Image (cartoon, rainbow over all chains, first blue to last red; front, side, top):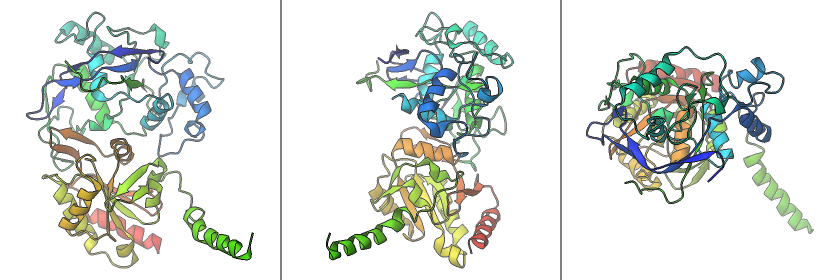
Length: 245
Length: 192
């Protein structure tokens, strides 16, 4: 196993939206996930090696002008003070390139949401309203002005740190979220915008935090570099495909 | 080196150079900066950057779609049927398959024949799922498998100029077709 990664055992979760007649439960194979979000320091080493992803070189099709804004605004002298904070203002293209450089990949939505269900004590908290309320509390706190170092963040059952309450995190298939965005309550997708999507319906509207993540992904563009958005990488476990219980 | 072999080398250079050196550098805002390898409906390999050189109207489809895909193809036909002048010959409608597993290049070829899409005016592309995801993300196209057979997807049509820069995007089938037509004629007037 790569250093800094933890093994997530096979399992699954109930997605917020599911297809009409589709499975209520999505199985997830065992995989490896970074224990911590990628930090500014780690991302700087990537950029030093792959210079096309440096702020001064990156092509505008891969990131907007906010790309790595904190490097020039908060820590223009090296990365003093922010080295161990989660890297933010990275676009999906850049995050993907980073994981690829590390021989990893971005986690997909199902993997991320599955791990996000874990509390400190259990891999799946189920309908624990207490846990949901705590996650929601984090989400409704105004964006924190100073991000914590990744080591100082909340740790869940799997040993994964900072999944909730620090920054939003990118997933590989963010563009599978199809809410049209016109209305927050809109779970019926507009048929003129999407082909054959009318059958998607919310499963558990009480999981408002999951709904927020879904809505965030559905409004995200692959070039967007957002100050409250970071990422971590995942890897396959050799031979783990299709061995779900 | 004999005179003949030098001549042969020179000839070889003359033939080969335009393919590489003749390829103008892509602008920074060209979507072809993405790179990646694809397969055409006729089985030929293609690097994404090779799409440069002709303006394109790009949509993402899958050939088994029973919902709006046939409408997209019909609308693309409609949008281009009345074109005149060099743009009519230049513009190539490019359909990217969202279902690489079932839409093999052979299947795409068959689909082209079934739909009566000629090879000069239409191109269908097959790529591995990762390339499809990247290209779709680049153009703001969203899609999601729905059950075993269907893929919900954006009805987006993107007009790219010859360098691969986005010139117009029609996000839904509710948009006025006249907007797309106008964007194409604007592009045609610039390219002359």
